[in-house]
Image (cartoon, rainbow, N blue to C red; front, side):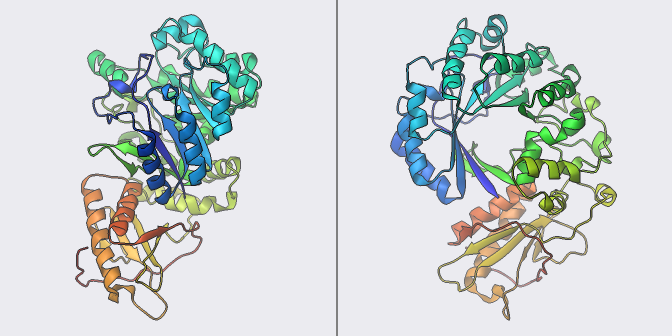
Length: 469
């Protein structure tokens, strides 16, 4: 498992995009934290397992001390450091070069239009296109790896190939990766959708033709917020599937406490409607519909597919320089998602009995590590504790029952409460696992990174009473 932290370090932006997230009433508000506060956050997130970091805003490059922050992240041991920007303030000579020298690995560049008319209309500022072109010239000179975040909206939906061609032809030295993001119903986009009773439709975007163009020109690309049935042969380019296949999970700033918490694959609120998705064999690896889209009738754009999901997982793992032979293991784990029905699991051609993803912990006062497992509840499977959707188990020690150790009984009590609360809140299984990790840490246990499991395990059942931490 890889953890990426998305760290907000700058409030405020000089653009006013038609879909702006900052208009979201549920978005955590942040003060612009001091460098010392950012250091504390970086240190905490690193101790909790984050190794990749992306700094966000607002407009992140408003921070004049950004180089100090980047150097701090590198010194702490972060191995992949990125910054999001709209590029419109990258006019100071050598500013970007100094960030690269401080340790910046890549840029996430918000680019939504390829002409002055389109870019300025979406950014709602008359200088959007010209300033972005200036910034892109600097990035091109540095050949800095760049992820182009393209939010697909009503204004640009018919110009996506033109936008990709603009980058490819005008800035050929940029190692470009495109992330085409179907507009999320958040912030201003959500307000407009509620007011109008409609939004951009999946049928309005020809993702397949776009993918064909990108693939034909050997461009790297992802699709974000697209159900897999809308991607044709480009399923392997689903950003969410890439995260699930490689088990890359995130820390994000979440409400109500404005704390950085594990958010799994960032799929909270996504749904796979039963009427269209109940028999789809790609359901286990599909993100489904983003929050708000069911209410606007987006389900009508979906259809059940009958593809074998394994080749898609193998393709993704190969592209991410991971072992494609682990694809059956990942598929077996992903089919334990609570909303994957038995009839879908039965149709999959690759039934692999594997050891569920382990949560491995150590404790200064306990001689052996403790392995916990949070899986989807399944009839007939032994477990220490069950909720309607989740099961909690632990692995035995050689010749001993861990439950007899007082520290183990305490953490098991805390873990049962954690998955009860997660299930009651309707959380996905990734969030339930994250809740167990936090509960264990509150009881004095330290999470230990463990390799992807490859074999079946036996899970002891225990009906004894356990105390609280």
